[in-house]
Image (cartoon, rainbow, N blue to C red; front, side):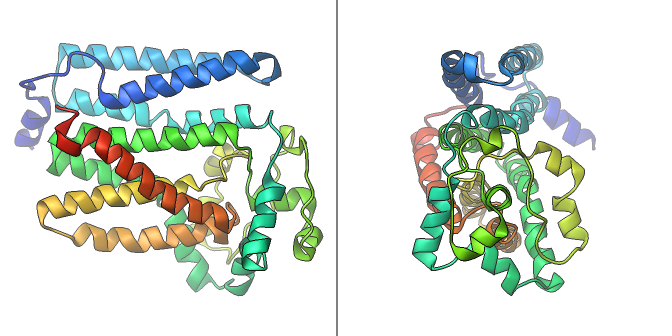
Length: 328
């Protein structure tokens, strides 16, 4: 135990004097969305709260930077990363404030699913597989999303600390890339859109434009699958409180999980041990299925999430890992 604390608190030989790469990513997203906020100020519902959230982000960043400068060690570097990761749920709800003032596009994506697959996969999947033996692992996969991210980043912190900041930067940049898309592409997903147009229209393949319906409504259709423990976790009050009628295209659950899976594969290759991948892959597969099964996404969202996740990983790999461009 003493060795752990001594490692965490040991003064770094070359402490970072300025901002770390992931903090620059936060500032870039903050600046871009602040410009959007100013442009759209009169149309936004809660611009004051949005401004306060940005000020809070800067204050937290400055405080954690100050603590690190006083005690530059692994523990305070970890605190800087945790401080920005903890803000992600707030940044997610922030996307709703932007995209709900734009014309809703769900009818286009529902029609795309219908044209490509001859049905609504988000409707037929759950109806074809309602049993608890299937739905419970699927819901567990969906619930494991943030835990998978935390687990992989913690593995970098413990087993390859020299790449920890790079890994955090890759993950945060991926989140912010998706959030920019969510800010500008207002798609709520089947769980909201089906409720808005009625299940009779869905079954008949009728997908009307709902206009500004989601400016006021956050009502969802009832959850799918067996009413078990894992479903109750996903549908818990804490989870639902953070949900908004936003962020359906592409699926960031699949996209960021793909990025994290690539990071894990890289770490396993470096260590010559692949056991963690055997644990990760089943959760990842169930998570991918869950996005459509629980009607959070159209199937085109899920497909776009996977391929965009691969693209984001390779782009961020070139930015942060290739030739050690970001040094610790």
